[in-house]
Amino acid sequence: MPAGVKFDKVLVPNEILHGNPEHIIGFIRGVFDTDGCVFFDKRKTYKKPYMRLDLTMCNPQILGQIAEKLNGFGINAKCLRNGKHLQITSKKDVENYLKIVGSSNQRHISKIIKKHPNFVNYNPANRLFGL
Figure 1 (cartoon, helix red, strand yellow):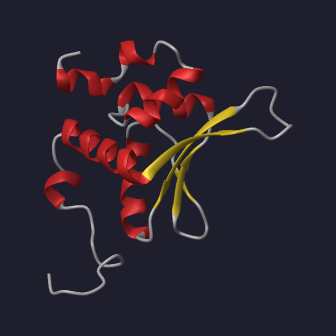
Figure 2: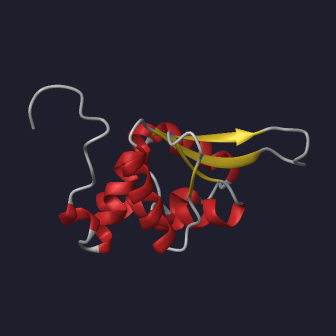
């Protein structure tokens, strides 16, 4: 690609998008580990802090592609109206994401363990490293 701003022109390569499910999951894990975050919604309407996953980037097309793939895995992921955020919010969908995709980011893992102490035992990313 020529030099210059590309954030709105880059898409997920077809080899990944239509490839082996393990490659798609690995791609999603890598994107969330670098550009995503795990946070706890602490509004008073919730009895306990509510875990959410958020992916922020300036490319709504890639966010849409990732949301479509996550939805295909049974994980309800929604792109927000501003087109810069993809969120996984329900308890069931967050748990499905953790079981199917997981995380290799130690900072994310530390936060996840606060809510799901046994996450280290079922984190799919551990299979990559033989843990």
